[in-house]
Length: 538
Image (cartoon, rainbow, N blue to C red; front, side, top):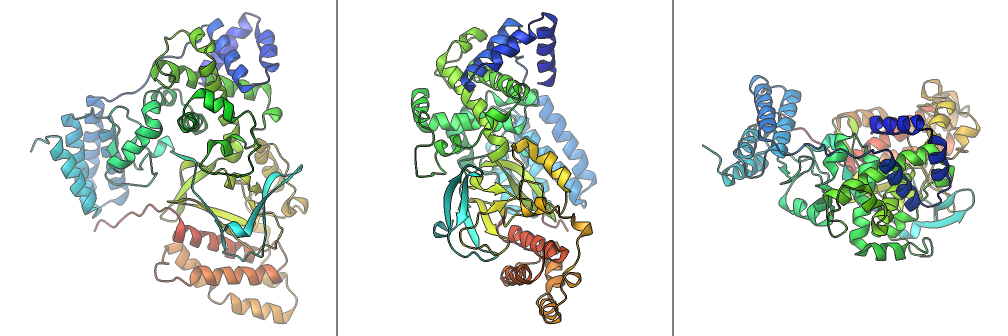
């Protein structure tokens, strides 16, 4: 898309129409009109999206399978190499034409890797797939939503909260697997699965079961399947792809463009916040008024391309459009959905959460998640809550004790312990606010310059009490590092108590407190979060 955008800007400049087009775009006041202008500009300068997309292909599948075979045969005792061959076999399955011999062979080959990992149930499943294809031999009473000019809608506590308390478990309105995980995780439930089955038509979606496959097709993939490949070929990012999915889901939820249009005329009038309704997502902050013209135009152009592929490759609007852009730009239903895609592109940066899993000792992003209620939680560089992704959605828990009537704060990736104030301010500009948390006001140092508790406390009795409290902490850290918590159900409770005692007695900032809180976060992820567990092969 960068090349396309640069070509368009060059054409506008060469014809001397840059100022005219910029002015026309600048005076537009709705997302619908911005997308319409972007489409008109595309038509004027003959910027027609190319019909370039990767499809099912026998030879590509064969090549991938042969490469996987080469790695597998020579590295049966190397876990990382086996993981590589497993992913390549899955990719070969995704790309193999439906019902083909290549698909059958790829299933059969992958079953051998699954056997090495002792994934016997999945191994048998792959063998069966090959044979079928003729293989040749929230705690609601604790929280309330408030509004202020400074914070907008935000969440406060209505009672005393203890460290380690779970405050919210929210099912997402929608999730999306990032493209990089397409051949290791289910595109519908986002779980890692060792024996994925492919979409019958595209090469970008695989599923853990026929149930997930059918659910995805019914909800959104019957439309995405014919459009996403073109967007991926243009290197569209996850924001753009998720904007498309949210728009498809919204249209499916309301039943028609007219119903969708009517439901948004009085956007914030409803008092009940429903996480399973697009309306709750639609009302989240867009920061449209704070965005530059270049930012809005880039998003509008991306939305126009998405709309073009939806119109010309799918029946989202009842029938496929011809390739003439004028047919799209003059269709009110199409431009309304284009405007909705653009609105979603503006909502996503400040409101959409990463969907994560634990793998070995790392936390890895595997997708994105639309959590309307959790999106009301504002940022602090010294947060009092944290989150982890679970099979049921998003879990929010308290890191420290929180007094009644206090606002809960998450962290948007700019923590005082790992970034200095200037670095945080630069990164937070994307959210169009200036953080005024205590860490920012007092310009707290980063972790390497923090002092331990015994350098901050002079009272001998309190110091001895904290030393006693921390006597098992080093062992807890080792358990957390090793993931050795299965029979140690006391860990979360003990660490929560340690945190409460430290917060009560130790001046902040303090590296000891940081260490305890980070260990608490690790244990929460190990206990409740998604996991990619790699079994031993020997």
